[in-house]
Amino acid sequence: MKRRMLWVGFAGILLIIALLINPRDIYYSLKAENEIMSIVKSGGLQRIVGCEGAEVKEIRYLGGNIYLLALDDEVFLIRKEKKDRFHVRYEIYHYEVCLDRIS
Image 1 (cartoon, rainbow, N blue to C red):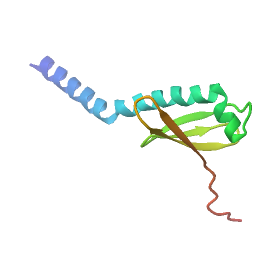
Image 2 (image 1 turned 180 degrees about the horizontal axis):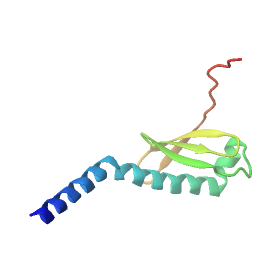
Image 3 (image 1 turned 60 degrees about the horizontal axis):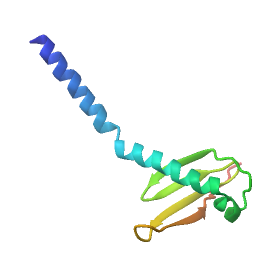
């Protein structure tokens, strides 16, 4: 009886952990990294934003088909919009915010 309760408790803990870690976000994060890296490697993005030879520091899926791309000195937001089944359009936004300076 104790052994069965131990297995039920263990299964319950695993279920709670599985619910806390959202596999959908992990999937979209990995997919986003592959999509954005393919754009960066093609050179099209670097020609547009003027960051030739910049190294990618971070790619993160923010949700709602919006991705954050951090290069050496610049940070960009990339919005992915599907036109139809075969065509995808990417909108690139420069992300630069200075809230205030306190001295």
